Length: 165
Image (cartoon, rainbow, N blue to C red; front, side, top):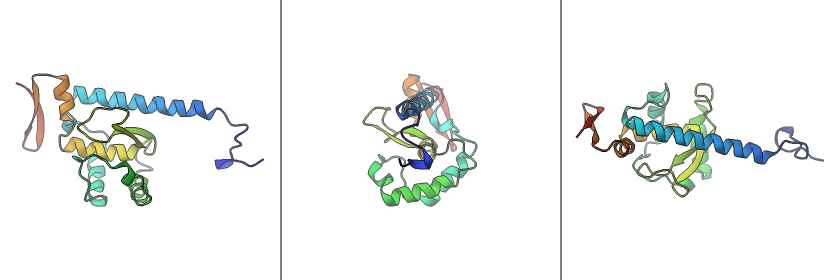
């Protein structure tokens, strides 16, 4: 009898289906929590980590053509070259960002709500990099505005503030 990955004997291993379900539940909880935060606070005022500035600068340096306004190309991200680039990016945070490689749901486009066809499964660092860039450009502010009719998020001197119309 051969052993599977990391010396795991598949015949004696616990139910992997249950483990996958637990990961899915965690990913959905994270998605719901993030959406709820965006409804309560404009994304442009939100910090996702203590390292947001560093993560954003690193993203701009390693992915100079990345445009947070564009729909993400999952095939490109998950291509051999894309995986290598993203893996190198993510490994820089292995010791500084908790759960940096934990599976997370990410909207393919900042203009969309979460949905089956609008969402991809990515490592947490990809989520952070993309959403920090979107938030910096105010691309998620519409979620707050939708949850607070009559309030508009206005840009003032590089900062934003929610104001009642």
